[in-house]
Length: 187
Image 1 (tube, rainbow, N blue to C red):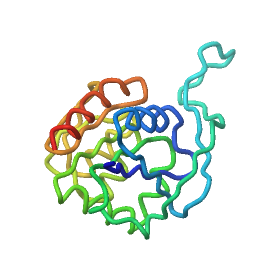
Image 2 (cartoon, helix red, strand yellow; image 1 turned 90 degrees about the horizontal axis):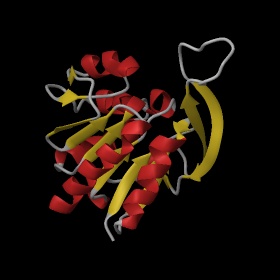
Image 3 (spheres, rainbow, N blue to C red; image 1 turned 120 degrees about the horizontal axis):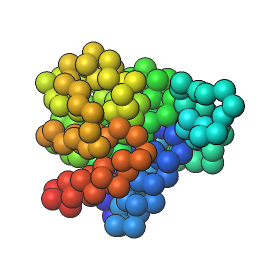
Image 4 (cartoon, rainbow, N blue to C red; image 1 turned 180 degrees about the vertical axis):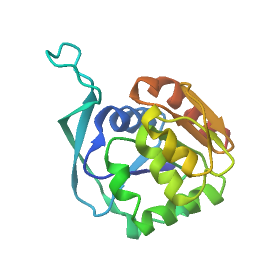
């Protein structure tokens, strides 16, 4: 069964993570959840409250489900995976400094394997140095992160450039997963 590398940490966005986690399994992929350590991690829900008495300009964060990482980044090797799925939330802001994570993402990218990325996950692609010269999308507030990585940012549901497919946020999951599944099956 082909394996998909899914890096995350505390505050990974629940919808960004669980939809692809189960969707990939439906098509026969083993999703290997990896983190700084092999342990249980907290997910969060990000949304702007629709009926707030005081409007919010940014997303509000609430606790979500837990998810278990069975692999530590330091023990991962890109050669073991058919591709990678990088979810969003606040986790990428913190785990992007992990050199083992960046090594694995670079190994997967250099092998030409598909990489899907949603929302704040772009911070990991930027830190890995693999989006220079590419066109990508991400949540609009991460446009600067994409541009600092040398990419051209566009605001659309899904963007495919080479072996990297990106989307803005969890509301684009269906578009992202359709393209990512096509890429995986084409290999």
